[in-house]
Image (spheres, rainbow, N blue to C red):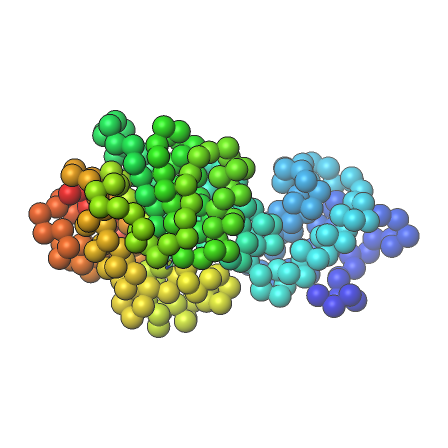
Length: 293
Ligand SMILES: C[S@@+](CC[C@H](N)C(=O)[O-])C[C@H]1O[C@@H](n2cnc3c(N)ncnc32)[C@H](O)[C@@H]1O
């Protein structure tokens, strides 16, 4: 935002603005750019004041420091310039925990929590399973969540992006969990028959579809672009998983809503004898491809 573009809401510039005044100004500045301007303003203000969002709602009279005022203006400018809110905050919630994020990684999505829940259910039904691999870990949200929920697991999580792995490692430290991270093309470095469970949320959006989406060029294309039919990376992983999974192992892949038939068909070619199904997300859309070998 240009320095003089910060809307004034009538507060006396000789004194520090109150929470209520700062909220009004931020909301006014965000209105043309966001359908959720009031909420965004509250979230940003809570973020720069290091307080819960409810605190700003019940302390309208509290003053902002000069530093907080400057931080709020900078954050509002980023949102106005089109930066997604989670990148402005630098942190986003997934499966009940906060994860550091940056534009080097995909913003964790609530749909992906189904993959974590399905993995935990399978692990509970297979108590002797302990070796888990995740391909395309990004922020590490899947691997770190599983490590936090089941600390006995030996987890290897890879990504082709070195920048993503820096964030993933920090998230493992943040939650004090043990995950072995490695830079890799999918599961290429893993030896045959070493994974009881393989999980992945890989790029699965067809290239032409991606280019029409608002996330295009806002989140890493490497994390989203699944090639002409969205299944290019998934097919490669299926082929690698076939040799890496142990006997009676399980493969769980997040898929796009339109891949409810094409993804299991691709899996069937690689795993002709496996039990293969697709689990729906809360909206009823096909979301997790499950292969039980
Ligand atoms: C859809 S994002 C998922 C990130 C994270 N697991 C999540 O669920 O939020 C896909 C990730 O796969 C990574 N990736 C893309 N191609 C890859 C490849 N060939 N090998 C390993 N990782 C890859 C991207 O860098 C990105 O971090």
